[in-house]
Length: 314
Image 1 (cartoon, helix red, strand yellow):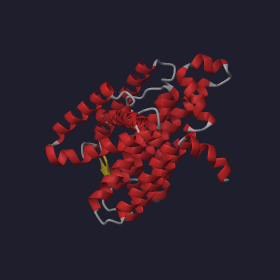
Image 2 (cartoon, helix red, strand yellow; image 1 turned 180 degrees about the horizontal axis):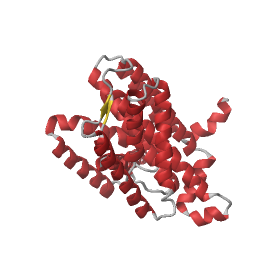
Image 3 (spheres, helix red, strand yellow; image 1 turned 180 degrees about the vertical axis):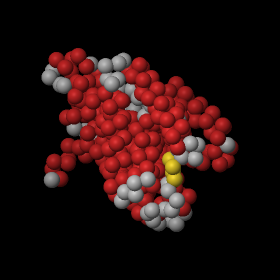
Image 4 (tube, one colour; image 1 turned 90 degrees about the vertical axis):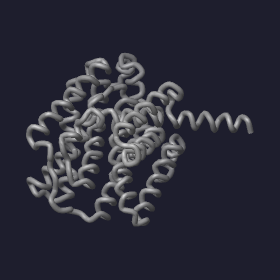
């Protein structure tokens, strides 16, 4: 068994190290007793899963979603509806919510795969805004909430932790597998990939459904620890947040996506408390622009470059 895992580990040591390191910190934070720290980590994991779902869609098939809040929000709303309206057992609701997000998000993606990336991104953004207004009209500004906490904090934390591991490790193995190579080939040149016998349409559709499923998982995490979902979850900032996370961290490796998610999540959780939301968004926007201008490969690329120079100097 371990011999079969060796090729994966050797190819992505950095990404695997980052996943395991964050997992250890995540577990340790629960035993500190600081409830706000646990809340911050659950927020982080929700958006990390969302950013990873966007990362695999764009990096490994070249498809662009500017409305990834769509499956994220559907996952959150579905969970709340299944629990509050239909009284489903939590485990059933947790399974069905991301599946529904995958079906709806994947179907929207299916209708756009023939479009150029820019037009595809705009089409999905429009779909997310349709969901924004439907949710506002149907459930109002107050959204949907669960009156009482259905699960203990420890249980919620454990579920979010398991979702984090499932998502990141699945993407890790896809990234370092033959499927990952085929997806990258499709991104680089769809026609050449088709001529080599790769079913481009099949893989593009498949990756959109997988990406939507993981985005839905992120949404279920969000709704699970907040016990609430409203129309703002479909907002444009929520769609651009995963893109910013991937840009800041670096889009060439899973470790970069995770690094960017950590940086942006911490920034978006703590800066509003100190300086207010408007200044937070200004700093957030400036940070993304600076990274694009100075470090096109993201913060991970900058770190690797600095370490490489240090080794050469040493």
